[in-house]
Every structure is written in C-alpha cells, then in structure tokens.
Image (cartoon, rainbow, N blue to C red; front, side, top):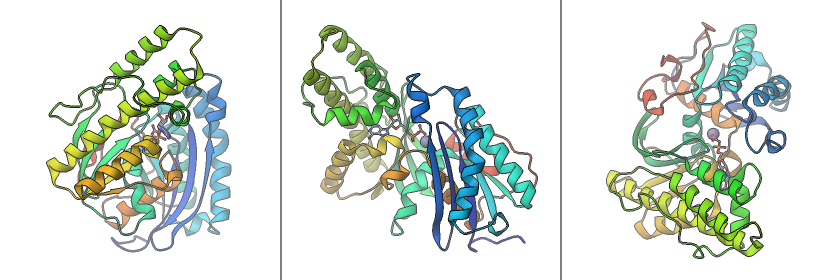
Length: 356
Ligand code: KG4
Ligand code: ZN
C-alpha cells in the first residue's frame, strides 16, 4: 500500500557510513521505538584511526544481529515497517555498501520500499528529533569528523551552503591535535577532557579566517602550530603543558566556529542556530554558543548528546521526515547505490533517493 504525504510512517534505519553500526526503528507518530549502536572505537584504537577494511568487515558481522535486536526491542516485525532506509553517503565506500546491501536485501525479502539517506541530512535534522518546538528555518553549524559547514536551512531539503572548511574539518583539527599530544583515537573527546585542566590562554594559537568576510573555515594551520609547539616543548613535556596545549587548541577552534556562526546568523537574519555533528558534543563550544546566543537574542539548539555522533535514529528520522513531506520517493526497484562523495547542496528540493 502506498502511503501519502503527512500520513504516519514507520521506518527501519541503518547507519554504517564510518565506524559505528547504528540501527533504529522510528515511527512518525510514536517517535523512536528502539535503537542499537555498536561503536568500533575499541577496534580502531590500536591503529590510531579508522581502518576502512576493518570497518566494513565489522559492519558485516554486526548489522544483521543489531537489526534483529532492534526490531525485537521495538516489538515490531519487518512486515510492520513502512520503509527501510540506509545511509547512502557520504562515507567510506565499503562501509556504506554493507548498510546499503543489507537494507536492500531486507527490503526485497519483505517487499518494502527502500530509501537512501544523506548522512549529513541525518545529522542536520537530529536536533529536531528531541525538540518538537524546534522548526525551520534556521542556520545550521554542521561540525563532524569530515565536514565543517554553515548552512541556511529554509525548509526540509532546502539547504544553502553559506561557508565550509577549505582544508581540515573541525573534528579533524581536534583529532590531529589530539594525536600530536599523544591522546588516543577518537581525539576530540580526549582532547576536550584534557582541556578541562588547562589554561585556554596559555598558547596563542592562530584563528584562521576569524576576521575574513566570508563564512569559510581553515584549520590546517592550527595543526601545524600545535606541532611546532609540541616540538619546541620536547619529549619531556609536562602534564600541565599538555593540558594547556589542549585547552588553547580547543579555544582556537571554538572561537572560530562561534564567530562564524554569529556572522552567518547576522547575514541571514535567522533567529535560530542548530548545531549538529560530533563536535557539537563539545561542552566549551556549547558554552560559548549559548552565551553569544543570549547576547544577540538567538535560540541555540543541539541534539541530545547521544545523537551528536553517528547513530541509527537520525537516519530513520530523516527518512520519516522526507516520506511524510512527500520528498523522499522510497523505491521498490532495489537498484541500491551509494555516494561516498555526495554534496548536501545537491539535495535541494529533490528526493534524496532520486539524486543520481
Ligand atoms: O559526526 P561524527 O560522529 O562522525 C562523522 O560523521 O564524522 O563526528 C566525529 C568527530 C570526530 O572528529 C570526533 O573527534 C569529534 O567528532 N568529537 C568531538 C567531541 N566528540 C566527538 N570533538 C570535540 N569535542 C567532543 N566532545
Ligand atoms: Zn557523522
């Protein structure tokens, strides 16, 4: 049976774009029914970063059992879901293929429509999952391990890129600086924890593009500045210096993110800022954005901490929103595909599954 726009939808969502296997059942009327997450962090830690081949193999081992567990927890059979959604991209090709392959097999077996979701749209919409009062339009600061963007979000599927990083992403800057300080992977949370004991003014790290008129970011120079400092301090660097380096690095990154967000809000005249993606979990960033939001009379919203990093619910939720709005045409063709590189702007007004 074909459902029409604004009818209730129940979606099984699979997220496998990188190092987390996330599965969820989201119902547009009842909300999140169940979800399961397996993080590969412990497996990749030994290598200091994500090993793509290991990531794919682990998704293969985990995804189906997690789907079965999530359906059981949701007290819902495969026959009772209206559509199956998977992360189509961007992400690691092998990892994406696992989710796309499994979602397609399940959809074929149960004769359900299939929908490929843009990973960043999942992040972007995740704050709306827990806050029913939050609505379009808004400015979004999307800060993940691979992306740093400011977007003007006029409506569902209408995303205008205002600015983005010209080199490293904010998450990458956290991760690379953390590595230089001898912290494990993923570096962002580890650096943030160490920063709590340091002086953010101890080192005057560069804040690239802070005063440029555009809304672009650049973080590659920061990593070089941290490297120079670490080398200068030598191998016997004391704990306090490491904490000071961490705090000063975090201060530089969050200063730029904060100031560019304010510029984007002024430029667009929007009254709401939505922060999404892994770096959105950073408490210093939240502290600064909250303060500046109060100052300029702008509402600042974040996803629940558990939905900042990759997860299944954001994919099931994004699919639900698209299906309800009549934007996502879930397909019965089962000619699944993936988009390891996929520009979010390409989604503008189009159905996620239709964009070739
Ligand atoms: O959105 P995400 O889970 O994955 C991608 O789609 O990339 O973001 C992961 C990124 C990593 O770079 C990680 O170090 C960073 O988010 N991150 C943080 C924090 N938690 C995660 N960075 C700074 N502070 C945190 N608390
Ligand atoms: Zn992500």
